[in-house]
Image 1 (cartoon, chains in turn purple, brown):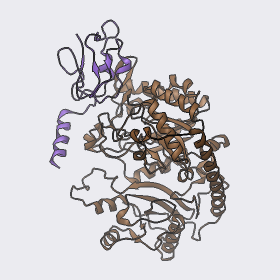
Image 2 (cartoon, rainbow over the protein chains, first blue to last red; image 1 turned 180 degrees about the vertical axis):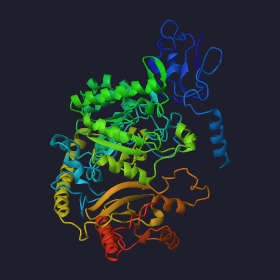
Image 3 (tube, rainbow over the protein chains, first blue to last red; image 1 turned 90 degrees about the vertical axis):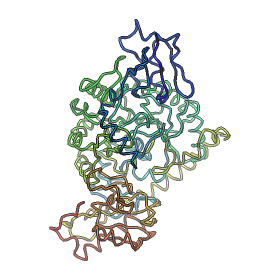
Image 4 (cartoon, each protein chain N blue to C red; image 1 turned 135 degrees about the vertical axis):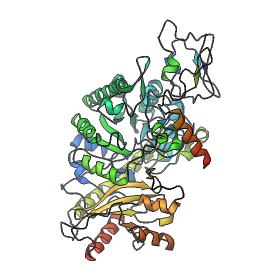
Length: 92
Length: 510
């Protein structure tokens, strides 16, 4: 059981100090979680600490491979609004 | 990380403020700071106690005239953040608060110290080092404080500053007070949690992500507590606010009142910058920024309340050099690695340079104070006029209209000439319907001058000349290489003489 950081990570460091198991390490091209050390914060905190401070939607996955912070959950931007803005930008 | 567009944090921006306040009047014709560009607002310094005036008068970010002589730099050592703001996108870094994304590189404390000393040795006018992001410096306490600790010891002639959202401020005050830090900037956009909930979607607090009004309430409490603690320690506090029309614009007068009553010496209201391509909540949702008029009105309404900084350039978290310039490219890590710095020798040189600057500033300040006593020869009821100036510095009109990337806006009135703001040539698109996609750069530039009645530059081409006239803005190329304030006053007097300023006429606004 471990969380996973994927390529959406911007290397902002926020998760590094809050991990109770010191399972996160800095590497290229982005931060990673050592699955042997990750406890999913079991016994320490109710919520995944890394995913509670991570500002990037979709950057951290749970053991099932699902985004802990799915699109729209952190920014509050409705998905259709974001899609509209992206389409608009690509049209230029 | 790449920041989409413009601007950002304003940490280190300047303000106005003047010493030798002598009169309670707004300044009048002035020769001003040699470099000038900015007018002055002596009255804003009048309320400052001597102890504070002493501290800020040579700070390029806080002192209007000092920013023409002294330089500042930021080091980007603090990438993590503990809150989310709706005007910031962490993928690109923050649009309003700092933009390290464009910034190229986040530094380790060791790299930051090397860079700072390299810049200090090569740009002796650099007196101030700030940490402003890209995230929140106090959410990266180890990196931020190690940088400050080492610089306090190894480069004691550099002043240190920090900018924060305030969430982690209370527990950082003790440590901050141990270093050479006498200026802290807190970004406070609200004192009402209901307003805050529309600006901050979440905070990370006590090991949980907290959202909504509850999150805003905690953030506000921490900001206010931190502000009070800093004041109690004798540390200067500046407050930055991002003006967001329809959200906190009316509320900011209250923010100004509250933070001033607690002892903040300066309130800097900055315009929201929001574009869809930033990917920020405000950008995507079509939230517009304030028009220049709205910004000026708010700054004016707060001015009686508190000292304001009008020429904040919302610079980025790794800027190097004089305000408004960025020499960061000269000091990338690979270049710094090859530099041999003898800091002891550099400090000797820096001291001499600072003394020479001080002498020049003192004489300019004296001269300005004397000139301020002379009132322009117009009737006291004459209405004020806004004018745009194209300049690259040195206090003179020296840029062609078509080459100007930004304009300095001045107000001429019977009280004299005062600096109002900078306007980027294409920054103030409000995103409303009048802003069509087909608008040319020239049209955009002219739009950015809304509210101005004249534009002073070294030259104006035929096409823009006509378009400016149609827009009700008089092009003027007759004062090339002249002192800005004197030229603005000369044009104002000509307008008065021609009967263009007769009383009932209201200022032509946008």
